[in-house]
Image 1 (cartoon, rainbow, N blue to C red):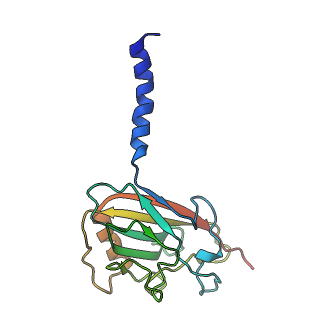
Image 2 (cartoon, helix red, strand yellow):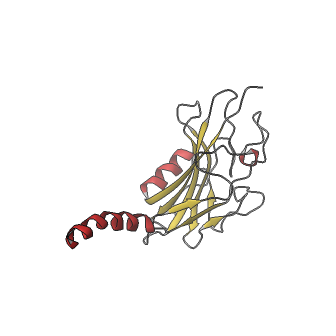
Image 3 (tube, rainbow, N blue to C red):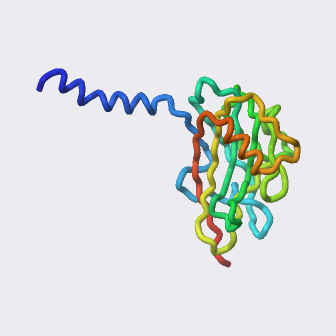
Length: 187
């Protein structure tokens, strides 16, 4: 085999490896992509009985132009016609790369200084865990970190989830998502 042929057969492997070497990545000790969440991340109310703790989330390899981060948790399977916002945190400083378990608890004040938690579709600020209707099947919960091109999203204190989502998307450089699952069987 000639040497130039060997180089060209190895080249695609080198290119594909370098593409993934610096990928913006979201990880968690508390939830796993494609697996059912346990009761720790389940809402406590609306007929659900869980601990309602936001999971630990850690991200790495943010794009170099990142100026802040946002986190959202969204259920696209909620029978609302528009999904369900379980959590939105904006204006997370660029130096922050991890949220501890229960950072979404507004009474514990664990969210990063300067960040803002948007009112969820449960009607309150902070994390609202999984709570699909009984017998509705498996729901997907998309935990997404956004690398943003601005230091601060200018949002009113009473911003809706839709407005926050619009501003997040308008300023996103890159995202990374963990899609965890949950279902409530009929009793």
